[in-house]
Amino acid sequence: MYIYLNHVVLPMNSNQYQSLKIELQKISTEIPQTWGAVQNDATDRLINLFSIQSYAELHHKIRNLPDNAQHYFQHRWFLWQCARCDEFIFATNGNVKPNPNPKDQTYDVEFNGNQALRFDIKSTKVPQKFHGVMSTVFRNPEILVHYYYTHQSTGVRSCMQNRIFVVHHSFVSTRNAMKLRCQWDFKEKTFTEYAGRVSDKAKFIKHGDVKSDVIFIIENRDGTLTRRFVAV
Figure 1 (cartoon, rainbow, N blue to C red):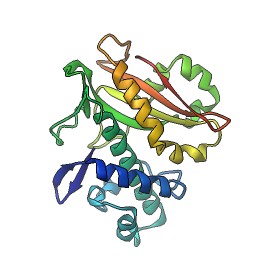
Figure 2 (figure 1 turned 45 degrees about the horizontal axis):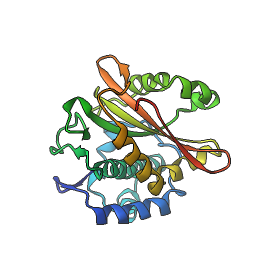
Figure 3 (figure 1 turned 45 degrees about the vertical axis):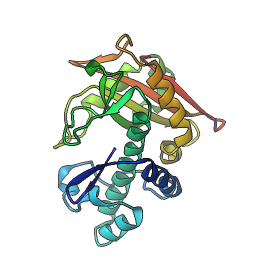
Figure 4 (figure 1 turned 135 degrees about the vertical axis):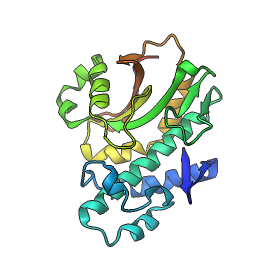
């Protein structure tokens, strides 16, 4: 939930969130569905993505790059901004505090003033290989969690930490995945409910020495939205 501007980190405020969530909803249908390349540090170094404040500015910065690199940065910028919004929503709850040190990548938020409840918020989707077995995934979400940890990106961002995976999945169309990430009103209610229920007694999913939870954001076949919590 931080803006990187000229190497100065500023917390997102409510006005910025309100403006950003509208922009993200507008552009969600034009964002490439795929990265164009595997997420990697070499491509990331081509531009300073985290200094870019708008989609129009992004287009200007990447206009001379190859198509696959342009798709990469469009996709990456959109997902980063959605993740910032998710983190901001969590931090609006009274029992949730964001990490006060923006350079510390070990966690994003802390629940209930309890260091044992520090988590990185990871916004993601259901991998293609699991689309045909979603009933199994819902019954055994640990298979999804283990997949995320073992297939995480490499490079400077690679680390093991407690995580809450916000998992988006549409039973209508895979092309709805981007729009689903921008269901902010629904997410605000969902994350507030989750924050009110989380505790150190929750049955978190273990992966090695770290623990995690899953919040499913689901678009049903009739277009309605539902959420599923795992540990709380």
